[in-house]
Image (tube, rainbow, N blue to C red):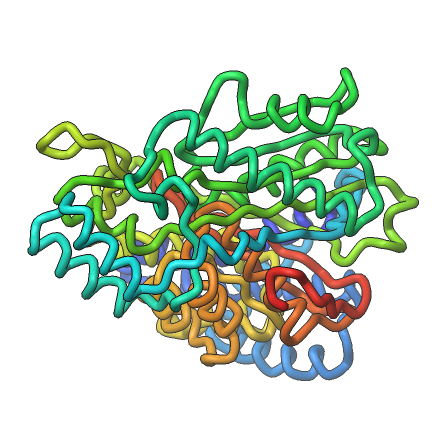
Length: 484
């Protein structure tokens, strides 16, 4: 962990536990004295951070007023005590912290664009569903209504196995879908970057609901004839947050092992998960999930820094699966007739909001300016302005309701979530690959300037909310194939 990371943990301790700690302490007769001491402690951290990080004069002037406001709420003697203790801890943290971890670079990303023959409009989907005589009238009407309100457009993609008549929902058909998507995606990433299979030291493949043997990772190793010492990993069951989970795993490898490159491949299999029953909660997945895949190359090699687009500076993972309602919000199961499907319950959106709140509590102290942190302590109703920390927001395309809930909770503008809404409209929910489509959309449509901060936000079964933070190392504007 970097010195700044350890230092920020001190700030988080003084900030994150304040509100919970105040609840029982408010029973004390002298509760305002306690709150004043906490504010004084936070003020000390602010002052220490300013002196250590050499903040700009503008930020210093803004913070000075907030610090004075905090100190005014604390008795003089107690304030001096809190200041002394916290400054001592802050100094010790800075003095004895370990050396900074290796830098992790995101070199480039490729997102798969299926062939035109696989495009299916909403109207054609409903027409084909009615012709197949699989679903009852109520289930057909439900799918049509959901499609028209989902945020998906008329050029999303289904695999050949579902388009053809009759459908071919077999294991071999599912394998053919994964092979087509993964092999072309990796091949085109190699072509785009100039790398070859021999340049890959670590391979991470994530696919939530399709886990053949040999694994998808082994299939890629075999197809591209990778080196015998490649470290391959296959992640399953991570849901739509799997893309960020894979990035976090890559970061941990790259911070532990020197001079390595990691290939991350994200894909979900639609053939294997298509639902042919009448349970409404399972029919939702038919209306949202579509064919997609993504691959990206990461590195910690100093020689790759010049060609890198971003540095991955932080990942934060949150899992609220201890809560039964959250755990059961999205599940793969059999319906009343024994037909397997991915079932989404009505509480998915509020569960995502709860997971987001949990994730933000850990993320905020590491990314928000000190002005925002102080305001959040001074006013319990204050919603931090994350636009002071990030210029780009890559929100998972879980559906229109999920995107709009994040937009509301974070007080974002419509333009901030436009890459996510456009990705949902054009490609639907591509599960763990979705956040990479949002990234390439942002790069193709608006681009990123050197120094811009990017927040990638994924939600998934379990229930999980995961964040990855990137810093643009140069101006980025890429004409990605998926957005041509």
